[in-house]
Length: 614
Ligand code: TTP
Ligand code: MG
Image 1 (tube, rainbow, N blue to C red):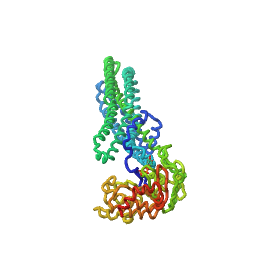
Image 2: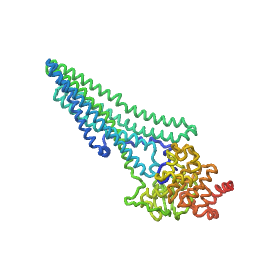
Image 3: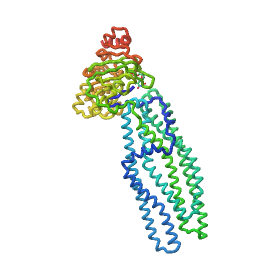
Image 4: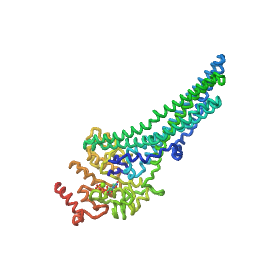
């Protein structure tokens, strides 16, 4: 179990080992093309850019009108000048067409620019909102959600929403407008030819329905499988050391390949759009053109229709199928966006299980009394892991929690830091129930030195400064000296400015622990929670760490999940935790004098160490 650092509430590493990321596939949204609730809520993010959207809309209307007018200019060029041999009228029409193309060019370009401008900003806002909310969600949320899937929400799902908000909605309106415009003009030019063109519509509708039924599942799967792929990859990279150590590269590769192939299959399915549907629309367009050419040609020969009208009509038939094709592409974009949007909103709506009350006040400066009263707690409902915990710690005392693995020591410390709320009973600090005060004001006065010594990328100084970013260079050095970290840091070529790689891998475990202690020293918390590392370090480092800890613990209330004999011996109280209960409590001498679990543990575990040290 990783732990949080210095009051920030950060998670140590990716979770979800050996979990099947595929669980996600089933709960993707139900393939809706339009979910008004999702769309309305997402649209509200466009609100700050309403001016951009209005201008884009106006440009879109202009572009639609111009594109419907152009074939009419061609018709006029043929019927009014070329066909009657009066070429004097041709230049103005050509000029008008050039003008129309320039207007089309500018309005389309401007519209694209405005949409991209607003869309990218909405994207950034949504990502900001999501990460802000992720930081508010309690550790319990992060412990139970797969890192890769969460990343996929923030990166991929948000991107499909952007497609919808920026391009999709405007395309929808403009395509419908162009389609209506073309239909009106076609009917007014020649009702008979228009009706003939529309004969292909039933086939068109049929294949659209066929396609949408097939694509629905496929597009849902592409979203789910990409989340799965990111999840698998994130876990592989995080667990690379273990994969290589156990020579399980092949099985990890197999697992990844499976996820990769699922994603491929989903995409190939979805690609039906390109290789079946779109050519079909194209074909129908050609058939319609053929029909118009045949009947229209005859009509022109019989003087029932002018040549210009026929040419204009042919141009409309071609254009008629462009918005239809775009609308069907949009249809799939909408499906992805509804699914992605629902997921994004679900994350934003996730109610933190540990939340500040509406009237939560800041925690006053802490003196350091900690009381656990009749505490019962479980991570899952009806599965308590802690029972009837009663523990009273006076300000400045050090309490050591000892006991077998899985007994509930980390869980007790999780409650004191309020990473979780008790099921019943209460945790009081200076007599104040931790649920009545603002979480951050509470944790800002607490320090946590985690078992796995989490180090962020950045310099050593940045890491020491983590809990108190405004600390001066002198303060950082003083904290490092206090923590016995100064010597090793100043021996590094770049000293305090040494860049730490992700996860702190270019530092030894002992060095990382010393830095974490310096971080806690600088933050100077009134209450310190320390999950002592069991990993063995050399005896000199061990002595340095112990010495630093002794000083760190002496000035404040401390709850130590203790493995070091000296920590335990010097503790004011030792709590022996077993199966979620405190079974013994007392000082080292009192407990050794008894014949309970502590004495057994002590004899088995520590006496040998003591003999070694002597
Ligand atoms: P812990 O409180 O983690 O037990 P521990 O800290 O005493 O053990 P160790 O010495 O190995 O660090 O766990 C108590 C029970 O709670 C155990 O059954 C696992 C469960 N648990 C969760 O379900 N979720 C959690 O996040 C944690 C920390 C524990
Ligand atoms: Mg633990």
